[in-house]
Image (cartoon, rainbow, N blue to C red; front, side, top):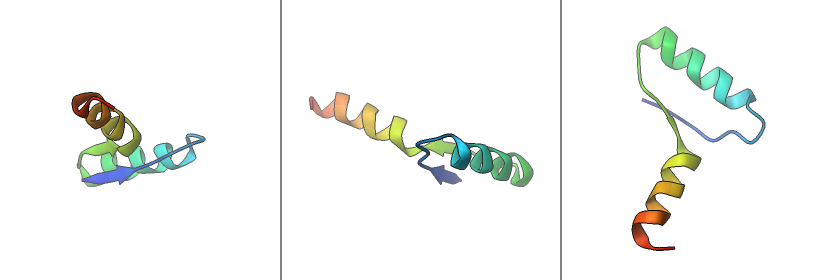
Length: 42
């Protein structure tokens, strides 16, 4: 699993390439944090 946080998109690009080349999952941490905040009511 490749976890990433990207403000400009550069890290996202590299993370997606790495995940694709290793046949693994790519996870955007910012999206996961936002989802968790909604679930917790923040």
